[in-house]
Image 1 (cartoon, rainbow, N blue to C red):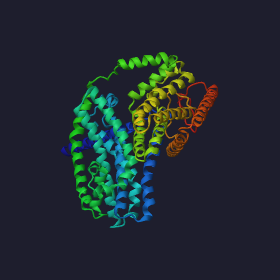
Image 2 (cartoon, rainbow, N blue to C red; image 1 turned 120 degrees about the vertical axis):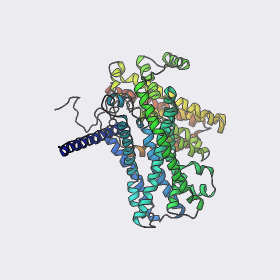
Image 3 (cartoon, rainbow, N blue to C red; image 1 turned 135 degrees about the horizontal axis):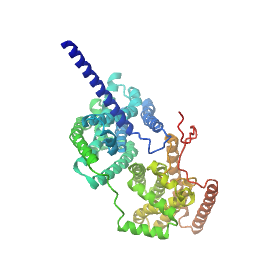
Image 4 (cartoon, rainbow, N blue to C red; image 1 turned 120 degrees about the horizontal axis):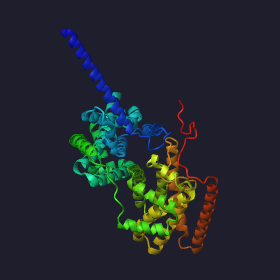
Length: 562
């Protein structure tokens, strides 16, 4: 009898253990799936298409660089530069992922509304969330380093095959882990130290700044790698501010490529920095998790505050003198409010801002011609970035508010969109540039350059929005429909060629009244022709598009086929 009871108790314990393991797996899958939420994109789209594209793009650079530099027999500081490139790539990808999933590092109100009524312990939810984050980081860390690691022995042949693989995996993995934990520590420290509206404001600010900073570092990383020798030999202070150089020093410590003792001594420091950030993560994430749980469960949803006096005055002037009709006013202010309140759109625009900051840095270092090209480059990036951001919906399920009103008519919606870009994006950017223009150029040339840049920005606006038929942030977006690689090539070639030739044209025209008159006459003619073309297109399609459907898919008209 006693053996039977023991057997039954053992079976119950085994069943309970299996249920617990299954519950944990389901929770991990739930939290991991929340990283790729498709509800805000398109009811018919599969976010895994964009994820597959992203993983493919991230996997390509490591293989490309290894195969490119393999025939050159990299040694010495050249090998250090290549190592720095791989270390930086691993760190930046981890930084991008954690910043993009900034709010998903902790369960949100929706998670607790769904999960709290269930018989789940908070420890279960905590470990599942932690496992989901670890799984996300592991997937991207493996993806970005897989091919580079496989082909790395062709670059560095000293030692055995397994030793080369082990060193490379350890260094790039440690660097990626360091950056991911650093971002998580920043997020946790904000939750521990602040609360309420101050926490929300600081969290948004830090997330946006980090996204822009990582894009900036992505562009300047090759130049940092090529400058490593100069930084190390001169003991420059910036050397100690770059974690990517620390972990390159760790690589040097494990497998010396140079004879610089100071550089090798940075290796143990990188391990110490990793240990410190691991400790900080342990002492910030768990307390921050508990605080976030309490605030999410107990605190009500924050209600947005109304606009201040200055904002109300400006809105009143715009409504009276610039915006004609209720539809224009609704679309114009909807764009402003969405950009002010939508984290994903702020991050998207922050990426373009980081790219602009990197290009601004390079153009400032190449002299007078670079300063002439800078406003043209940044205006192109600004308008194209807004064009891309407008395609992503904010709250897709709420676009019925526009569909039930006069916003079905495209003309006033498109007018409001173009007016917003001019008044809230292009004009403020050139107003900020005016300080630099009058600082580096004579006032006549500065005024000429500002007018020239504003004119070309309006032309770019008309070209990029010629076939646009949407209210910004209200149309569904089909993931995977856009060829990201092809689009990147077009953008890079576009703004580089455009800025260079337009800067040359300005230099040629400056001081020549007939050439200037011909230029502005040509621009006016082009704008008129574009306006006629747009009106012709609007006659063919007068309604606004609220649903982006993949042309290759089967259209079910919203019907469920059983």
